Image (tube, rainbow, N blue to C red):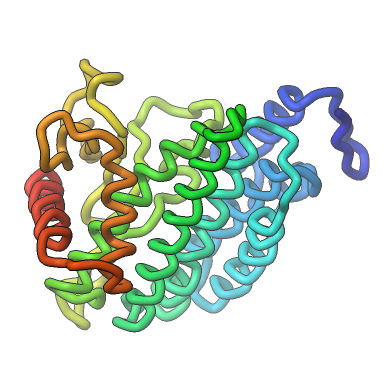
Length: 301
């Protein structure tokens, strides 16, 4: 395989990915501006497209509010291109597409926050919740098809699905209990997640989800909670609940409601989807989701 841009070419996927990671790290460490890093990154390939979009999103959070909208529009263009791709060249590309789709569900909320210094409206929060639920179910259905076809990429989006499950629970809680104008959950920024699988550029903890809060219209929007999501404690037995300012959440056992419960992220995603569309009797299902919400809030504190 050969991926090429104006004056950069690669002989294989690994070489391409390492070049992308190095270029993104120059932005993350302050060695390059956003524009310089974007120029360095190849404009072909889903991974570089995702990184370009994520750099643009992060830059929107740093610049003056009058410029935030332009960066987010640029990010949407790049992420749309990744999300619409049907070309999977690398076993990680299904994850790249999933992450692009996830970020796209949040761009309107991000624009409200960083262009207008307001929390998302109730309608924006509801639209984000519905879009995320639909995306989660679509990815689960695709994963099931991949597994049936014994596809090599079927397990790569498991981590993304875990993050989506927790985002859905938090968004559900905000909509049902306290209002999106005071509590909203969003995917973390590129630098906060250490560039996803970028080479770690410092020793501080990384995280997947930010919870932003605002107690009143007179107060600033605060990044109050930071969550790192893991699907199971079994694989991280020595990981503590709290790592400095980051709270680690393990879907199993933290969000389980039954003993030896399996596929917790799928149960949450499908449960939220069924509830939001009234597709079945909801009393038991809503009770389960309420219980998971309670357990998550207790962990977050």
